[in-house]
Image 1 (cartoon, helix red, strand yellow):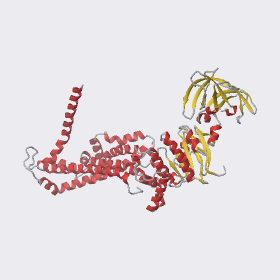
Image 2 (image 1 turned 180 degrees about the vertical axis):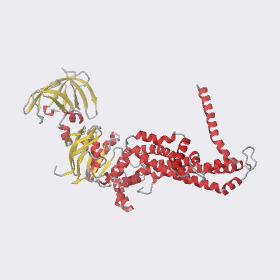
Image 3 (image 1 turned 30 degrees about the horizontal axis):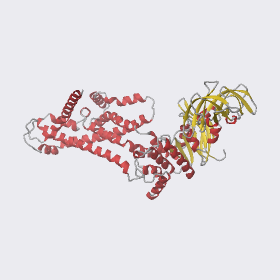
Image 4 (image 1 turned 90 degrees about the vertical axis):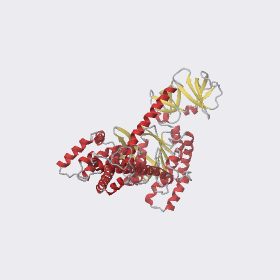
Length: 273
Length: 357
């Protein structure tokens, strides 16, 4: 029995190590080779250089792509989170006729293959005489992101005690003030999570951005274009390393914000929150 | 009632096919401690929420201090509520919770601090200003909820089973404090509970509710000593209920019961006829056991006894009937109190209450 658990533990331990290695080592190759003085990705490393970062910084097309992605990401995060708040509040607060099918339809983009959605949207937009560009990409991304925003926010709204809002009405606050002083602060962690999640989804989304984009690519499409030219590859690696560091940074900020928020509720200097 | 402060006139409320409140009318005086007592689902909480504006009545009228508030939204009403689960705002500390309702008064920080600290001292929570909602016990949360409501100086304080979640000792302590607080602030309290002891201890008047209707509305003493129906008698305290048939009527009514034989009791305004099935209600503490025979005593057999501290409960069965059992509460019974012992049951017919329904 004892030796049996020992073997099982060893197998599980090995599995865990392999799993983590498979998950992270390829990612770590990105920054590693971005400093390699060669356009080929192979060991041994030829020497250290910063020139890929210099070319990246000097690349105007890349800057435009980055700004495009930020524009689309921020618009998508904001709009899909607002829609998510309204939807999540409605389905958790009221019993609506046909509620289950309505929620199912909202959640549908989670399971419909993205390429089908992208092609369908492309045909509709072109048929309707719409033009392709950042707006059409954002529209596609919002369609993808609203279900995620809904899921995150619905769980937050469900965990939120209805009697807190009633207490606020009872203490003299109307609907808007109650939302601002009670509902919003209590669902804020969900809102922040939804903003970060939807931004991240939009930021690295490729299929929609490829189908619904025009000559102005977002960052993933730009990177994909670069990959076709071997001599541009190290620049993409440098960019990838930067994005990696930025995402770690964002996660840290989110975590710090979350912790600060919970601490605040205990020390609090402001009486009226 | 001439000096009614709260008037509920013919109020009804249904949820789907369920009638929670069924055409209820109640008048409550200013400064009164009024309890709505009943089992869960009897409509007491719904009635309280109608007073607070958290439910809108399906019909009828609600007046407070001469003002028709039937359709007034909750945030404009002169009422405040202590919620069953306290509903303490989890993102705010004690001080912020208590000050929540002061925003519209636009007080200076000093005035606000002063109000908060006087409200906190009223509920004995000085020094807890910076505590978070999750760092408090149930009893402390309850005090915060009270302070948060009372700081608004409402005309009526609504309390929805506020002591339900506390353990027995703390609950009894809070009952006394609540009563003292109410007398101190002089605000009209409307208190919802399913705990009959709590309702009797605290209230000036109690309305016993069942299935959306008020069964009886009276002082605690009247409700306890003179329940108007079987249901109320059964719900309030321990009560022996004996089935019987009316033998003769008049100022005194003779009833034949299987447990006690024929007894003559007061008519109690029940308008019964010969042959009616009735109930005789007797409190355990009004029955006595003797080891020796006595005129009018009934021979019984002890079935069980239970020591309660301040008294001992004896369950007895009348010797000629196995099914009719009675509970007797008595501190000084001289017998050994073993099961199977014979004893004599004594009672004063004036303590037997005739009930038709």
